[in-house]
Image 1 (tube, helix red, strand yellow):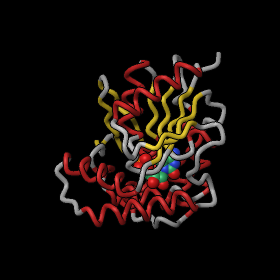
Image 2 (image 1 turned 135 degrees about the horizontal axis):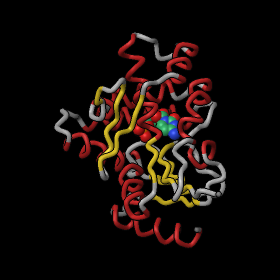
Image 3 (image 1 turned 90 degrees about the vertical axis):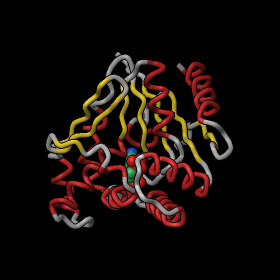
Length: 222
Ligand code: C5P
């Protein structure tokens, strides 16, 4: 039986995570945070002293990554080797490291099936960079969120401050811009809207606006 997927892609700090959680709650569908997988892989490599450009070791690590998502209601905990790394993977440093390992073709291939396994009835909300273009290219609904780098840095800063991390705006902006450039310009699965994606520029939209537009679009398509 066909299991529907809503693919939500876009650059970092654009509000995908917030939107996807709200959509998953609304429809009572499964949720895939694919970025968390790349983040955990990067964290695990750093902990093991594997260089972020060591293709064969990283691909091997990706194939055997002891990663689990523990769901308590709408709360998701990310475990690496049964250790809670939910907060540890959220730093901009880990995000930067994630975008380095994510540029490697064999790593992406190694993680494909793990991501596709999230597709279960009644449906899946998939959050990432290549959900609509590669991983779930047959998804009946594809949404691409975009926003200016400045407003994404502001949002990311607020998010990090809420977690009581010490952050500087100029550094966040610089890290977000560098990560985006890497994600957009890589050879394999570069960040770009799928041809059949609805593009929403969220720069001057509230979370509620983005949610409403998405719901209207999804209900029309499914
Ligand atoms: O979405 P998040 O910021 O958690 O993703 C971290 C990094 O993982 C991204 O900058 C990107 O390089 C990589 N990523 C990816 N493909 C995905 C999800 C994330 O390459 N589907």
